[in-house]
Image 1 (tube, each protein chain N blue to C red):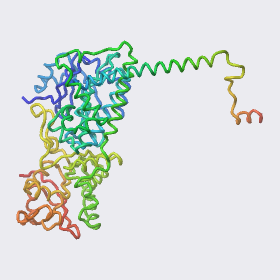
Image 2: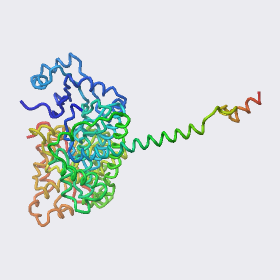
Image 3: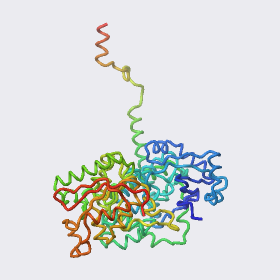
Amino acid sequence: MPAPAPSFRDPAGCCCLFNQRVLRFVTAGAIPEFEAFLQTNGARQFIAGKKFVSTRRLNEDETAALRAAPELQPVFNAQPGGAVFEHERIPFPSCPHEWPAEMLWDAGRLTLELARAALADGFGLKDATPHNILFRGSEPVFIDALSFERRDPGDPIWKPHAQFVRTFLLPLMAHRRWNLSPADIFLTHRDGLEPEEMYRWCGPLERFKPRTLSLVSIPTWLSRRADPDDQRIYRPHLLANPEKARFILESLFKRLERTLDSLRPAAQNQSAWSDYMATHSYDDPAFAAKETFVGEALREFQPARVLDAGANTGHFSALAAQAGAAVVAVDLDATCAGAIWRRAREHKLNILPLALNLARPSPALGWRNGECPSFLDRATGVFDGVLMLALIHHLLVTERIPLEEILRLAYDVTKSLLVIELVEPKDEMFRRLTRGREHLHAALDVKMFEQACAPYFEIVRSLALPGTQRRMYCLKRKGDGP
Amino acid sequence: MLLAYIDPGIGALLWQSIIAALVGILFYLKKTRRWIMEMFRKMFDRGPKPPGVGVEIPPPNVEAKIDAK
């Protein structure tokens, strides 16, 4: 039987997906605190502001119905006397390794906001990792509702401080210093970067820069001097004066907020693809024709959920979002995905930007590959429409993916619409990518493309973009593909 | 923090404790400063208020309305 619980580290309970529902099983001992936290001012405000996942306790009948499900027996058996809560489902779950640095920064802001609000209500945030957060469009939502517990009023230490540094501050520092993306870090380091690791990467002078000194060098020097067997380090040192303990924690959160703000990814970051919209090879009439074609397809099909594959800086994602779709915009360039996030936040567009390469989509990760499903597991059959604009030549030439495979992927992901741009081998960009390998793609033309589409899609209409070697296709998925 | 399960680190935890101790001193300094300020305020504010102090003066438009009556 597959493990039903993708979240299991917290001894207070676990969370699992069952029949498209998000269920949280809370142990008997943790129920009063969990319910008390959900009633606090902070939790209510964050739930009302859609920054915290909405949660309700299932009644006895609902719980009894779940008990009958054999898949859930191990979870019920592990937590006798516990209760089951149900969370709202976030439309498209994403993982920190798929976010641009901007989204990691935003998730860090929300984590600190919640930690401060909980402190005011007498609670403490017991873990501070980006895995506690998902994004609804471009807005972060805290989903690990069980991460709060009543704090000892005399405790001046925030235990997850080191985890917050490892999973937010040091990855953002590495992004700023070495342009490492969250994917470069989180695909291989679930719990972020250790100060000791960053210390090795820093040069002798850099180790004395104020921010590095505080986040990296001093913790490294202290850990070298500390006795690893000395358990006194981890014992709580409670203060007699709760006001003083709270003052110390508030001061810590303010300091962390200042540090996080200083690490905010710069808006003017540039990459090979971030200027594409200004430098692309279309002239104005061709681009206007492309825009009109995509707009008409969106109006005709009215997809509720759209995947924009190869979104660049999100021009067409914005078009789809303005047409009413919830968009997931995917681009391999993290700088482009960051630009989409800024655009979506600025114009309040329902776009979730993800930095991933469609030719090497995110794998399933975690224990038994069950903690974070692969991108394709999450995307298959989910979208009503897929946009593949100015993408096909990158997959064909750079990634050497056969045309049939590209269409098969689109067929798996969309439930209805595919808008795809055929870029022919004579196209300027196509030739730039082939670098002397034109013979490999000599057979690709309109006829061959349409034949390759036939098993999967019906051609609704097509349009040659004036003055280019490109053709737009509006395709409708066939119900019974091969 | 009975159910806290994350790795608190060693160096980072010690560094946080050192800063907490320093901020604790700042807490007392701020408290002492507030106490001294309060002392001075009480020292100069001592004694009953002279007649007229604290009586609300009506705004000019209200006076104009009274005159008109």
